[in-house]
Image 1: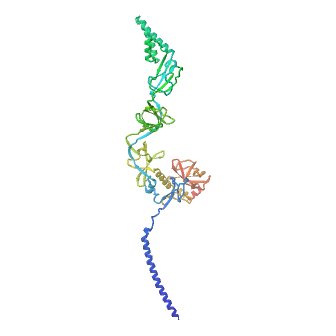
Image 2 (image 1 turned 180 degrees about the vertical axis):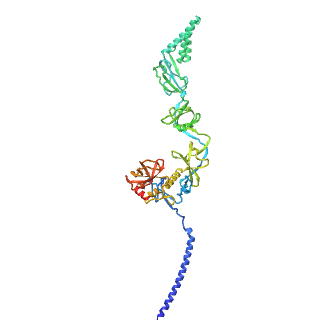
Length: 536
């Protein structure tokens, strides 16, 4: 009975062992085949490697970074900085800016070669139409009298040269005429008498005639007086030039005195335009240069003229120098006192070394251009500038002909370089130049205090006032040895609003700061003095 039970049990175990061995062999083969299949399919199935984000930087180029996405106070998203983009400045020559190729494309960087070209430009100025002073005539009398009759009795009336304007009566003039007529008659009567009497009468006639001529009595009236011996009651005054009556003071029946102006006649066949040229452009003005004048009343027309005179005085109120332009005035289209826009070509026709004016970054104290040194590499060069044209500026020193200068996005590259310099000056970098940040996004005081670069400055003091809205803090600090500052109270900006957290007026603090731009001091690290000393 016992053997009957054992034999079937042994057979069952043997069958189970054989089945298990075959199952294990099949699994091994399947696993090997699956691995081979996965190995073959792996390169096809795997996607492109994802770039690692190092940190997020301020979109305005400020030395402020964050380990997580955030927005600046203006609502702009911080920009991600990927691994490989934040190259160590030590790998590039000192002062050189390195930007990755994809960032160069995103910024829209364009370059143009410095080249020799004539630096022509147009000086534009405002002006006004004025009559030619040499074509203005004034009609006056040299004796006392009365206006007897007006032939031209309206201002603005056109007159021809020699046209009668008015007639006057003068008792003095009538007496002088009679005196001359009597002298002429006496001279004729004494023609056969003694020489002394005839000579005396002749002298009296010549004296009377000279007085009439000095009073501008017309020659034909003098001849008629000598022939007839009759004095005329009135004298006619005529226009000395052809033009327009621009001023009329004579009124019929009025009494006038010697030298009093009665009429003014202006020839408007040619006029002046007095242009007010700014002080910095006056050196380019030359007498004889051509000018183009535009008038608002005739927008479709231009009036050519010539620079005839540059006045020797400057108007202190407007810092301009008057420049006279002469131009013909056919049809009297140009009226005195009209406003005019003047274009004056200037510049030296000889070629000079120039760069586009958009390539120059002017800080107020110096001018800089970015010269392309290679793919994604740019050298900041300080340049000395000369004359300026409409789109180009002369370079006297700092750039050679043929060098490629950045003409678009140069301010963005400048902001990028300032950001990297500020980030590296903070110290405590992680990996590819990322500053060591705390949980609140602020640089720990210990890292900043212990590893500050030469661009930063350290100080200690107490909090005087905080303006969280403006992002500023006023500190009453001790002497700053690196800047040779004495103890004082001054206001600083903060690189990150998180730096203001936990600060209160009266708190003793240790802080670090940099000069972001001339006169703008930015705190990059601040902490209570006890905590800062504890980390050192």
